[in-house]
Length: 224
Image (cartoon, rainbow, N blue to C red; front, side):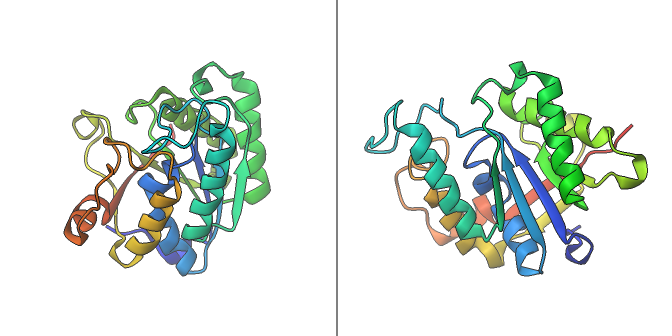
């Protein structure tokens, strides 16, 4: 099943870190934008507590926030995202933020933008505490809207047990036609993408890029 491009002309993406958009959804977002959709990316933090400083290192703990901010802007430009919101929450602290402040911030975005689709992480199945806390806050905020006004929520899941617990993905997007934009988005995050657990310092072959990045999968969160 592919995304219905025609139905989603306003998309809100909510992730906690610069580079989440690149690895998780850049191809899908580029595809939506190519079909005429407006995309807002609400990035909760600047990833200022990240441990990767580039290979060889060119960032440090003091300079990393501004570097990651500029990388995020470049990534959004590569994808074509028209509206970037940097919300100023603290990296690696989303689960400890005042939930009322966090939820109200997201609810205000939902009410301003009235998106038909929201993309975020699946709470409990996205490995990093910031990912899980962000997804949970999005679900809470969407749940505060009247039922008739709630957008569809597509979640990204990649914990080791996610398919056993929540089943196969509801939406699988072939992003082959947008791999150049996706790779440009990933590579914009120069301080991060060369880490071994992400891309690594070596050049990937076209086949490796296709296998690793050519499809993006989402789970539809069904509100209670």
